[in-house]
Figure 1 (cartoon, rainbow, N blue to C red):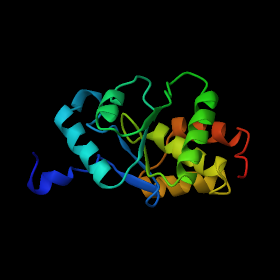
Figure 2: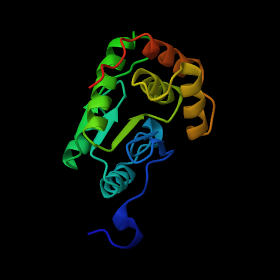
Figure 3: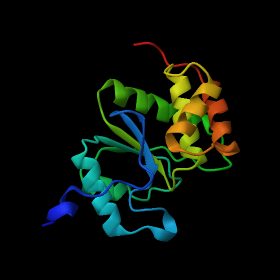
Figure 4: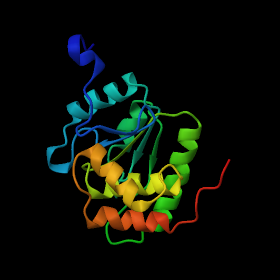
Length: 171
């Protein structure tokens, strides 16, 4: 049994709220590929559960970590966002899933290997697609401010792709 300060786990690296207490971003629990550690992943999943997260959305091109989420009984979704492929079908499915989860009151974490351009682009695109932010430039600026660094071309392309998707239907 884990005791002391580790009993509550540790937050994933680069953990950032996009919508306070609803939608957060981070790097992959346990770290990205060359530095991934199973023990760290376990501690981060403990922290996520302790913080009330009810869904993890993975954008990894591979199914890494999904078994760990299931072992921890953390509901999850996998929307593989691979470089060099058309992101629109994946974004459409991902955004509908995020929208439904947030409407249902779930606390959601979205990740890829690292908190970089692609995760930032998905988040900024979601804010525009869902009508939470009125324009692509404002959404990009907001996510850049929250994450603490600029979004590169790969992320900006995802925001443009997201803005071209059919808009969210009001409920």
